[in-house]
Length: 218
Ligand SMILES: N[C@@H](CCC(=O)N[C@@H](CS)C(=O)NCC(=O)O)C(=O)O
Image (cartoon, rainbow, N blue to C red; front, side):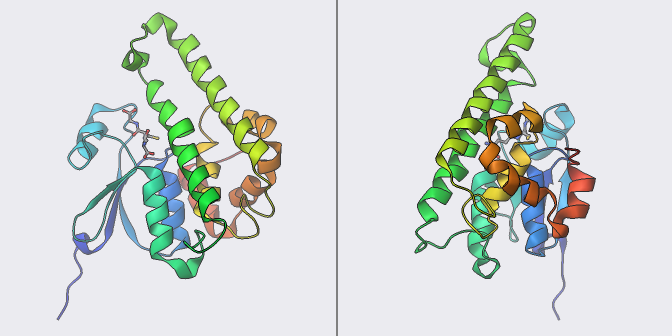
């Protein structure tokens, strides 16, 4: 007889309105059950301590695979999930000519854009004084806007960012573009990407997830 324990299931440290929602969206599309361990790491020491047991950087998303292996880094988690379920078609295969650009933009969103948000909860993390907080946050948002503009200029989206197939890149951008400087600015900086991302916002399989975990109103 086999029994199912929590450890047979994926466990995800996450938070509403965070990067973990991209992972939650992909798990939803793949129809993979998971246990969510909720905690708003950017505003709560208790949440940081909780995820810190598995990820010394104390950040979400952090994914525990069945058996206990820890995966961190949103881009790595998304690529791993997509590549592990090739039938779902959420990442271009190694042999697909789109694979290079897929990896390029996944890592661009992760390293050039998402990582900058770490500065915002406490600007002393980069040695700035609290009195400079607004200026620092504005500068971060301007850099992010520049990065979206740069990405938009170099992509030729179709139905989705890389062509006619939904990939985890679309999901990732749909979530990270909800962070500051927020969607109105994203639409202004990334007009070519906008339609594909709006399509992801309105993906019927993700309707309930977006509403519960990261509502979008525009
Ligand atoms: N490089 C990480 C960044 C993750 C990250 O910044 N997560 C935020 C939530 S969206 C966090 O946990 N912040 C905690 C903090 O600021 O201390 C990734 O791509 O997963």
